[in-house]
Length: 509
Image (cartoon, rainbow, N blue to C red):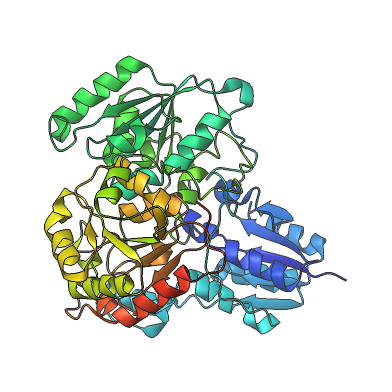
């Protein structure tokens, strides 16, 4: 007889979202099992559509829950709530096999109240969830969240906008960094596919306008000079008046700042879709959960679930930039003496954040080794990276390609066999172009969701308890040792690069 499993999670939206790896692990161990979950009604919608669930049971009181559970004949009960209420439920239901996760409430209280650290707090909530499966012989280390693991953060029964009611004019607000903007492009591609007749406008900054202005999925860009004429309350209100005059029907807001949500609200846009963790979430009309253990590309796509329930990933979701092989980079390659048969490796040593930069001398050594290996190496970077790129090029026999526009970088991708980079915006350009990407991560981690997306890429990182120390990195190492970069040696990077270059089936360009 197949196992019938009940999972209890009666806490907040974020905790409910993090149960997805548990369902996946149970199904992997027992493919024919059925899984039901008891959850608060206001968070039930977030689990709708999860492929591993057989039933969502909204919690409507202790008596109703006990009666419902006893009538189902469950064989296993997994308590991921671990409170007095869930204790009463599991005690009164008579389920034969019961496991309870360790909440470590005392350790949390001591840390919050007195700053006393405990090793148990270094474990992620998902890790503790998965440990609760071990008494049943189910073991898993998969902490990831994937697109489709959750839906919109609303009650069961809510559906997205029907196809006949697509908004005529949609505003997408994304005024963050280059990488964030690049990872918004798949959302725009899917938005146009869902509603081809809708006019899609993107509000972005002057630094990232080029990302969107050349895209076939964007009808118009509006520049938000939030560090200039649109700064402060007065400038924000000026921008809001401009947006209001356009009469947008819907706003999709990947940027989680209060200002972005405020702009959409102040502009009178009727439907405002954003993340539940937005600083201005109370100004949104539809909220979608934000999960750190999911890639940012997939998190952004989830914002379209209110417009189309059950949205699926494309088979080629990771490819959304097409290199223009004969474009802007052709002349520079020719001037550098790089021919059409040469294998080219590009290296990007820069970053806005100092702690995201691998050591200059190690980049120089790596470039020199690759040149000796017979590869043509080009150093790429923006205007702020000119001096750094020039030093690396002159000291390693590489070519300096710094200072070019985004269009040149995209063009260069069509000639690359490998892209070596810090955690940065250009990393997403290479991954989106299908170029094998070797990324060096210091203060940031894959779990934040900004690693190179798709097959054939690799991340070099050190296993340290202090990582991540910040979402974007910082000006200096808060611990004073900078081991997150120090432990990544030139030998490690060179070995990884050679392995990727020697792959029998490199990604096709």
